[in-house]
Image 1 (cartoon, rainbow, N blue to C red):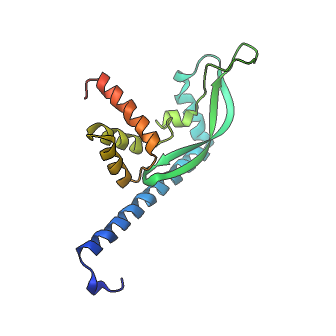
Image 2 (cartoon, rainbow, N blue to C red):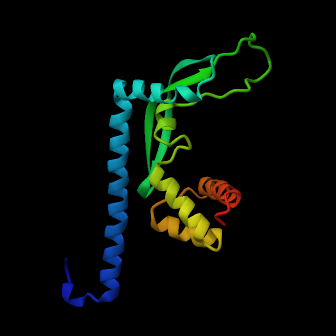
Image 3 (cartoon, helix red, strand yellow):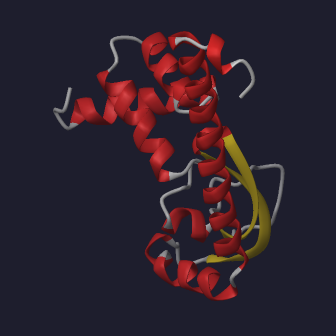
Length: 169
């Protein structure tokens, strides 16, 4: 707050931008803390397993736990230790790779299988769909604190394809 008498509109704008960026990071940290607390609950893990049973193949079994990272708003990444399920193969292991991949029930249940929160996903989809180019969308997403360019390019293309099929574009 030094030299307040010398401030002008540009100084206020710069301070406002710094506060906005800090607020986005703080919001992302709050969401990360919420996700961490949810992921630590055995009750929530069991509910997630029950709610995702419809996606399970008859041979799907629990495989233990795995570390997954989730991107929240403000470009905050949280690492979570989550239950993991995978389809058991009836054939003996050989040089052939498994055709089936597993998933984390909690992430699938909460709509975060892609490793990003629903708000981040919908923001990417929104700006990817309404922007005239990826560069314009990238600029807006950077302002939201979403800075993983390659990952968001893929998400934007996926959303564009699905919205085209639905007649939204």
